[in-house]
Image 1 (tube, rainbow, N blue to C red):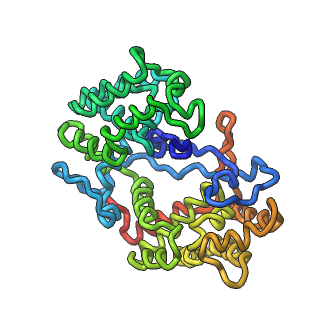
Image 2: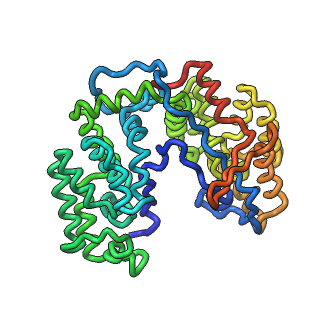
Image 3: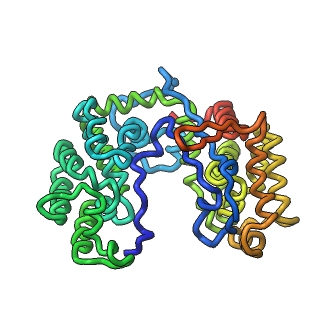
Length: 413
């Protein structure tokens, strides 16, 4: 097995309200396709990663609740107007399930003790779903999520999932009569513990069970079905629909929009996908795509990665929503690529990023635009929490997108 296929399970971290994003060097988070220039020196003050804009739940956002469970929708257009029930589940349980890989099994289970039995079962099922990577259960048991397998086993039984429970028990038995909750002990069973791409008989047996057990996507539906047939739990989750803040609803909308386009496709296909949306959706999509890259690794990363294909569209969108200063900064970046801006990512990389050795003055100037974004309206504010530095500052992109979405009645319910 290629170790690169084993994803790091986040255990629902994306749904933890108010979670802080740890600052990372811009060059370290760029797309691995190709080799970006390596910056010679990384200063702490260069790591401008904002604290995510977060709003607490509201008493009533005006969204109408469903009267009864509805089928799990896979329709992309529906997700632009209605928040899928699965997303409501993740919002409710993520604050608990994220601790699955952060705390010891004892501490994690203690944190679930105040929950009612159905909710506790749901949280544990969500940790299972989150831990199912490229190879399903095989990935789950290799990663940290596997430390809580005994609790997940009991949750499967409590949820009445007899067949998955039986397969899970069989998988745990492969580790011997005493299941190893210790990560290092458990990982020693896997072939690539000794050789990076090796598979041993244990791997093959576990992979066979994983195939029967199902994928992460399949388990989304299984968990929704469990909630749908548990009336009190369904009512609790559905009630969360009208408590979502506007910022939460914006996050759902922008995620659904950006997910509709693969920016690695030829730009003609990207342009066609954009054209299929209405003008407001298009504006919000390109702004969200830019902001995702910007908050992850700054302006340099945006232009280096595939999202850079839409840089001129982002510039137009910034002007449309009234962020003239931000648009001017981005235009300076676009102008650094010459008279003809290359939409094709590989061509843009070869012509401007891979045509020199190491980190040059050109890279420094492009990267420096990130600092200028943050310097708007008085500059960045630095928060030091423990040993970590967090920065929030002047870009103003999230709140501008929220104002735009509110003005056009775009927020989903």
